[in-house]
Amino acid sequence: MERLTGRTALVTGSSRGIGRAIALRLAREGALVAVHCSTAREAADEVVASIEKDGGRAFAVQAELGVPGDVHELFLQLEEGLKERTGGTGLDILVNNAGVMGGVAPEEVTPEQFDRLYAVNARAPFFIVQRALKNMSSGGRIINISSGLTRFANPQEIAYAMTKGAVDQLTLHYAKHLGPRGITVNSVGPGITNNGTPVFDIPEAVEQMAALSVFNRVGEPQDIADVVAFLAGDDARWITGSYLDASGGTLLG
Ligand code: NDP
Image (tube, rainbow, N blue to C red):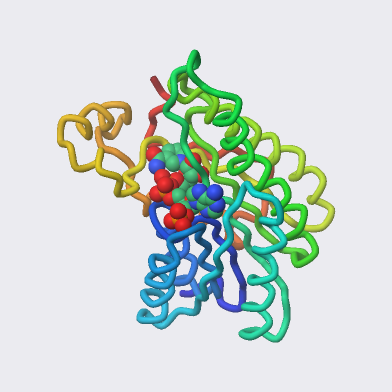
């Protein structure tokens, strides 16, 4: 059964990796999905084509986040795409997924790197939510992709983890603020997830990463997409302000 028929969704950073899987999954559930990218327009178009091939509905939007005017540009395209296909600009599901990682030792993080991480991972989601509230009504769903690194120390990713801590605060406080409007806000925290980058082609590296999960494998984008699809649907109506650990038990130590 298609649980999201008649709903509209924006998934930021859905040209590849986890976001791509989320876009495909929400579309499979019947949602009209705005597939967002920064620079990889061809990849976003491919995601749209793949959704359409399976009988779903989607369109691409392109806007670099973390730069002046980012949210304005994103919503110009989003509203145009929604209007064309639905006759309105209503948005039911927002997934703040786009993000950049750090991978820099604490001693070496520069103020520029720090600011960039915050601009893309924390500042942009805040202002996307603020703007999306003009389009969202009762029953709306906001899902923020956080990280297990908010609860599992890895000094190489200290600045990145701080941005995801900020995302969890975004979830907590907006959940309270938006409850009276019937909108839920939740965080999903993936552990190491195969996003197709070259490190996942190195068997020894994969083995080490897999050992962090109690299931002894790395996460697949679909593992995260399934959790997001649950939160986006009616079955999750009583869950808000939560952090859903989607790390395959990595946090169990
Ligand atoms: P990828 O690096 O595979 O994809 C990132 C996506 O975000 C792409 O669609 C990219 O667009 C978009 N993006 C990146 N920077 C910007 C920007 N400045 N403006 C707009 N869009 C941007 O990411 P993952 O799938 O690995 O991660 C997705 C989310 O999950 C992120 O928030 C990440 O922090 C989080 N996460 C990932 C984990 C993992 O192990 N993979 C673990 C825990 C959390 P484009 O293709 O155009 O560049």
